[in-house]
Image (cartoon, rainbow, N blue to C red; front, side, top):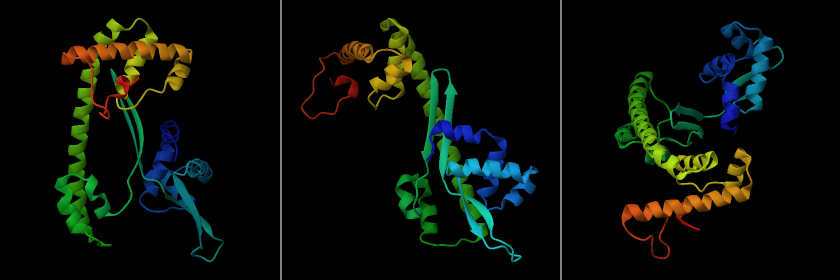
Length: 245
């Protein structure tokens, strides 16, 4: 599975996107793609090689219908989503693999309003076209609703980051400290990798550790001030990672 940057590098090419748009529908021969895209077969083969090396597609040799030598046919063999959210106080880049399994296996991850769709599908292996169109229309509506909710959550995330910016500037003495604070807020549930952080900013790891200690002290003071109490908890109580020394 390729990473986000490699996926973006591959997909930035319009011809490759067009090739994939055809291959997701059904397998194609290079000659078919050449005719559909109106580019040379040599160019198509070059793009297919890039896609195959990245495991976006796979090929197999199939017997010729006219009795000639076997021909290579290509099909898409990955299911994933590439997301990029960009704006003031916002940069989220994700490469997510689609979950596998049939309707019943997916049911616990789906919105409750799609329960009826799952019941209609059951274990059926074949659907009439009219029924499939009806179900797909319902799935499109569900996706639009999910996207609208996601957009609203991301917009709220932006607003929180905007509101906290003055506090970050007030308590940070350097650019590196501000960046550390933002890195923590961008991934608040995941401990900051200090080695990776120090490498990205070209600073000593000991300096990053010192900044982390200073920031942790500030966070603990904020935490206590907001609650009006000392920071205390029973053994085994889950705490934010930045409260744990």
